[in-house]
Amino acid sequence: MSADPKIAELAPSAHELTSYDKEHAITYMRLLDAAADRADWREVARVVLGLDPTLEPDRARRTFESHMARAKWLARHGYRDLLRGGWPKE
Image 1 (spheres, helix red, strand yellow):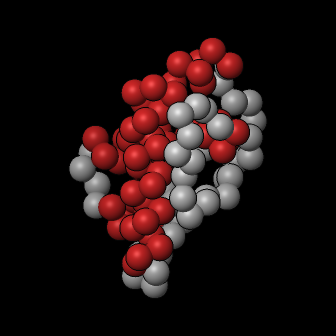
Image 2 (image 1 turned 90 degrees about the vertical axis):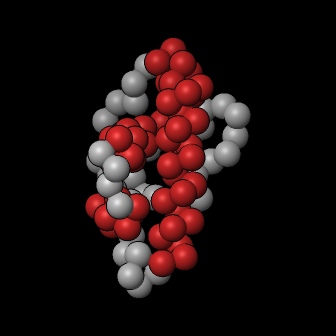
């Protein structure tokens, strides 16, 4: 797992944990933390996903929503596979 894995425009939508999910587990947690803090999506896109919602509002929103949905899926379902397989190593 790299320190700053590249963010895809769309997160996976598979019903099983993917290698992308494992690489981005920390990103997903940061997204869930931001949601719990009721952070503005634009700030989260900028800080967590490295996107500029002012320059690319549609792309930033699409990427944010895709990754937030995946983070919520991971929190509800995918975490079991993540724990079973062991936390990704750096």
